[in-house]
Image (cartoon, rainbow, N blue to C red):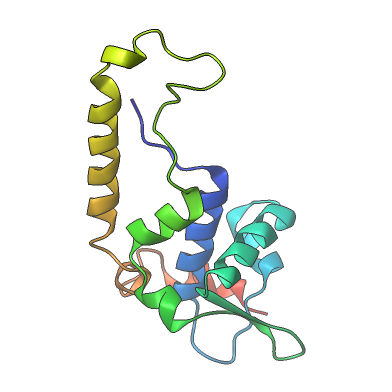
Length: 148
């Protein structure tokens, strides 16, 4: 089995990392620029950024000097917490949906998967966006195209 994030969470995490790794003040980072760097739809990136703004992880400033900026919350939030907020508390597998599993009453797999999911989040709780972006793994020349 493979723990996989939704595309929405993936875009949100990548946007956070790009914002954290962007050069300091004086450079403008927009949703369009992030979408171009990630080869993603600007519409999908905008939805992810809107959610990050609602979570107080990103500040969006309009106007000539506007752009997207990480907040203190955005820098200090643990990656595990952020993913929980973005993904919600979904089950790893759907056991009791429209077609419930016939083994549901005596199944131990559901508990094992829940424990594994918590271990996944617990490991990601060890890292903040700021820590992960502290020493970028990509050269600054790769980040420079983010700015306009």
